[in-house]
Length: 338
Image 1: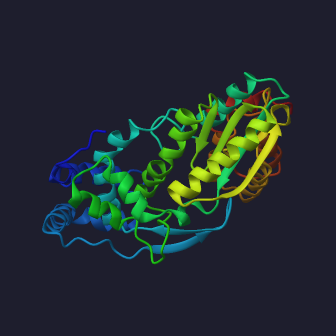
Image 2: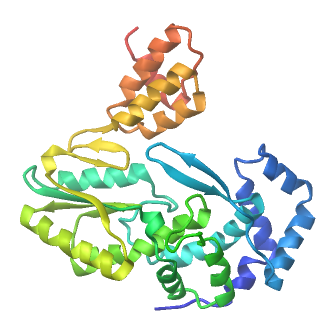
Image 3: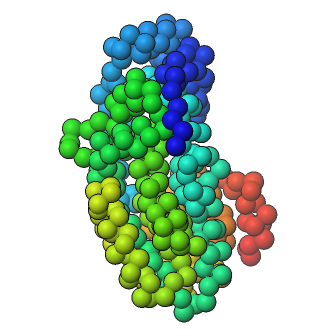
């Protein structure tokens, strides 16, 4: 396996730090932290450059807050200058690791995402009879269960520049024996790196043809029930012995009964958004929250739920709610009955 060195200088050159700053500020130029950093951009980047090269750089304390949808999580939000440093690292390491990921790993990768993951899963289901089975598994408290020492070993299989790895691991630190913070840009690629061995085990060793994973949720599609039971035990054993992870739940169901995956409820012939997303959409429409409405419409754009959601908007607009229909959906909206 090829290992890459001399990456520290590339990641933390003034040129790459400036490009990282441009990446970090995208969509955040109205935020106060971005504005303050921007006011003295030259001196701030020089300070980062000098601290990183002198070995005195340390991340600032996180701003912590809790989100409850779709489930309760503690988010660790880094300071803007630390976001710049993470982008600088990400720009250098992403391609190195991305080449080692399988095509059926869809989370947090350029050109992938929930829509493509769901589309792949549906195409795989369509290739099998309704009486074959789907094995669905997800990992218990994945981000909070990552062994940081094991993560470092996986990173060092690709990167031999110890100075860069040391700084990367600063963004994996938590005040707990296990786990990495949710909220860091680098946590996304750490999750991909940590579960990459599982992907290769399932595809190369177990030789499962139709397999798809999004973060810690994964499907094995088109199997007999007995095969599902056997594979589940093998995957559980691999997770426990190699990565120290366990399953929170698993289900075995016939293809014709459909599956919940990536925020969708899907069958071979149709796909809907999940009920909690539809309930959230109704709340956002009633509150007139345009940005959230647009986001949920985007989530539903390839589903059978879209027309129902546009109908909800039409009813609320007639009741006086001030909402705009995005141009992408205008023709569908106009086709609805009055």
